Amino acid sequence: MLYARHGHRGIEPSDRTPTYNSWRKAKERVYNPNAQGYKYYGGRGVEMCNRWTNSFEYFLFDMGERPDGTTIDRINPFGYYEPTNCRWSSRQVQANNKRRRAA
Image (cartoon, rainbow, N blue to C red; front, side):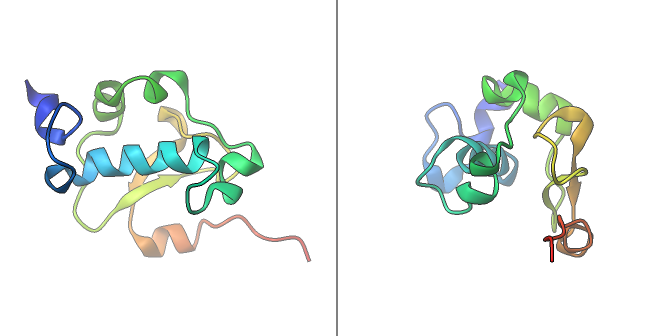
């Protein structure tokens, strides 16, 4: 199965793909209070759509493979992880898309 090679079906963590790891880490930031960065994501009310929370396959279908040199980026930094608000972006694009802190 195509999705099995991404590491969510019995593959060792060291063999997981960058695409799978991006999905897994985004879920951790949203749902795991012990995760690094949780206070900036789940702690601020950021969520992940049910389609992606419950299925790596749907995440992969919607986002495609993660291109080299990119990570998942929320277009609206105040919005959820969902198909209409996410893209693969370089660090530079993400740095220009940060939410601004109130003075």
